Every structure is written in structure tokens, then in C-alpha cells.
Image 1 (cartoon, rainbow, N blue to C red):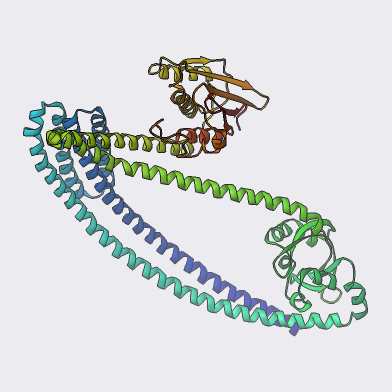
Image 2 (tube, rainbow, N blue to C red):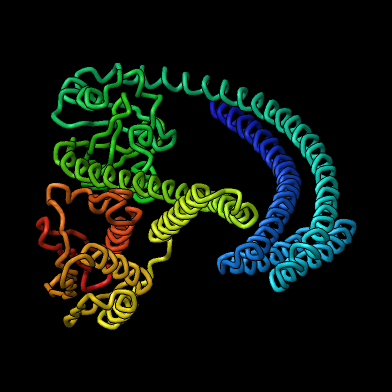
Length: 587
């Protein structure tokens, strides 16, 4: 009776310790949650302020670009400046709307923004007047007033940004104070919880040591049976289902596991021997059957060696009631089936490795596409500036430059145009991967006819022959880019032939549709075929045949996204044949 009373007292005291620790942990978690939510709120306010500052800078930059485009059109009359002006005007007013939404809770800032919006609208109208008015009026009457108004707008932007900077400083100070208060509270609660848990640990440790001594004394009385038990060809161990600890284990299983007996008996449970996944399945499916007194046969699980490596086992379990303690004991027969499972694991590892490599390649491609898109857009602003200043230089100082200077300006213009084309190709290359791939059915023959009709307008000398084309499920917009690039490539390299001809055809196999574009142009050396579909790869000099070296790379990327393939065949001087194949059914 005293022993039972002592056990009950130990359990009650341990439970009280756990309840205190749990209460402290819950309190710390609630306080931490409140602190984190406050910090998150303040962080969101800081991010909004940063966003407002960035949008202000972007809005001002867009206004300057708009004014520059208007002046460029006034000086040169080139249509692209007018298009740029209209685009910047639409973007500018969208940005102002966005700023109004972002500042909706700041009436003072909204009032300043309203005044700024009025000034910007006047400046836009002045720029439009510069575009629409007579040239002499543009230079003499409009531009000078515009500079004064632009300076006033700049000052209003500065005032808005100064107010936001002051607000940001207040927000940063508040966030720092909230973080310090939350951190102090969390540390205090954690220290109290740790003290209680240490007390629980020490009491449980003493209890485990006591039970271990009892189990070891009981094992000494079973020396004769242990010899047969320990040297069996399969593993044996028994578990006290009340304590969940291993009470007995044979040498065979210990050798498999790589543990010493004192590391296991009285210290480890059945779940300690298994992987996390197997322990979960064991607790969910196997242990309830043991507690119900049912026999468990031939269950496959994953065990762990002492070095954390895994091996497969098959277990069968029976149960009995101890005559000494009345506790339920479960008895395990364990068979090592690692060899049988090793082949299966190797296959799974290979599949996992392939998935990892595929994910790495996907991430690399995304990073490259993001870089290409960012660089392309960042290059447009200096290109516009170079082109604009070159045009202004030609207009204002053309007579002073002389023939040589004029020639140099023409070279600058040509290279700016070439760079702009390269940027457009880079953007197409990026979009070919990032755009959503929606597959649908459409007439491939009609799509090719439209592409050919566009090319015939500028290349009437070329004979286009379009044979019947089988349809394949694809993204119509992306396939239009494929046909445009392949046909333009064929036109470029066959245009100098005496009787140029381009033939478009298709062949159908059970799995795919193979499309072909054949020309009778200059062809290429098959030794360099591996360079054809690489980005920026060229087989001919720029002076002979223009291009950016991205067109065929774009073709390959689009076709591969559809689950297809691309290749080419040629003999130098005897034309070339470009092929791409698409699956007949959507992947």
C-alpha cells in the first residue's frame, strides 16, 4: 500500500508540474502572438510608407519620361515618341490613382497630392500642346513655361516625400519599442517554463532509473533462456505497454541496431527504434490492435540503426499480461528485410534525385528569366535618352557637325535601333517561359497562311508553298511566334537566292505531328548545328545577315514547353530544313 501511495503521489506531482509548465507556455505563446501581431501591423505600415515613397519616385520619373518623349517628338516628328508619350500618360494617371489609394487615411497628404495632380495635369497638357502645335510655337512659347511648372512639381514631390519620411521615422521607432517589449516578455516566460520543465525532467529521470534497476534484476533470473533467446536468427524484444519502454531484447536485434543493451532496455520505446513515418503509422494502426489483445502479423516498418541509417523489417506481435505487475506486455518477432527493400529504395532515391535536379533547373531558369526581363526594361530608359539626345543634336547642331558628324549620328541611331530590337527579343524569350501555357485547338494551316501573308508583303520574290498541315493542341499565341521566327529565318537566308522558295509541310506519327520549314538558301555546316538553338549564337557575320541570335532559341524554348522537340538539317549552299514536333495529345 505505501508503494502504491508513493507512485500515485509521484504521478500527481508530475502532472501538476506539467500543468504549470503548460500554463506558462500557453501564456507565453499568447503574449508572443500579440507582440508578433503588433510588430506585423507596424511592419505593414512601414512597408506601405516605403511603397508610397517608391511610387512617388516612379510617378515623377514617368512624368519626366513623358516630357522627354513630347520634346523628342517635337524635335524629330518620329512616331515612336508619340506612342511613348501616350503610354507614359496612361501610366502616369494610373500611378496617381494608386497614390490616392495608398494615402487614403492621410488627409493632409491627400490635399497635397490633389494640388500636385492638378499641376501634373497642366504639365501633361503643355506637353500635348508641344506635340500638336507649330514647331516655332513649341520652342518659343511652350517649353519655357513647362520648365517652370516642372520645377514647381518637383518641389511638391519633395514636400510629399518629406512628410512620408517623417511618418516612416515615427513608425520605425514604434516598431523597435514593440519588438523590445515582446522580446523581454518571451524571455521571461521561457525562463519560467524551462525551470519547471527541468524539475519535471529530474523527477522523471529518477523514476526511469528506478524502473531500470528493477528490470535488470528480473533479467538476471532468466540466464538459461537468454542464451537461446539472444542467438536466434531473428530479432526479439518485449515492451511494457504501460511504460512504452523495451524490457527485453536479444543480441541479434541489438547487432542489427548497433546499440548496446544498456542503451535500449529501460530507456528506449518501440517508436525510438523506428523512423518518424513508421512511428506515426505504428501509433495509428498497430498499437491499437495490440492494446485490444489482437495478434499482429507481418507488418513492414522502417527501423533506424544507431548511426541513424535505416533498414526495413517485418514484425509480428503477440501480447500477454505480466504475472508480476499485471501490465500488458507485447512481444515482437523482427525479421530484417533490408535486402528486399534496398532495390526499391534505390529506385525511390533516383526518382527523388531527378525531381530535385528538375526543381533546381526550374529555379535557375526562373532566375535567368527574371534577370533578362529586368535588364531589358532597365536598358530602355538610357536607350531613349541616347536616341533623344542624338536627334536633338542632329536638329540643333546638324550644320555644325558636318558630313562626318552626321554619319556618326546615323551610326548611333542604327545601334540604338539594334539594341532596342535585342531588348524586344530578350523580353519575348523571357515571356515564352513565364507566360501561362494554355493549350487549345486551332487551325495550324490558317495560322501559317497568316504568317506567310505578312512576309509576302515585303518579300514578293519568294515562292511560299504551304502543304496541308495537321493540327496539334498548343498555345496559339506562342505557336504564332514559332512560325514567325522560323519563316523569317528561312526568308533571311534564302532571299539572296535567284529563285527563292520556302516549303511548309507536316508529317503525322502515332505520337506526334512533325512540322517542317524547308528553304533553298545558303544553308549551314552541320558541324555547327549544336549552336543553332543557343541564345546569342550565330553562324554568319552580322554584316552579312542581321539578327540578334535569339529567334531560334525562342523557338526551341516554346516547343520544349509544349513537350515537343526541335532540330535542323542542312548542307552548306543547298538550303536548310528546320523541324519541330508537337505531341498529338496534350501533356
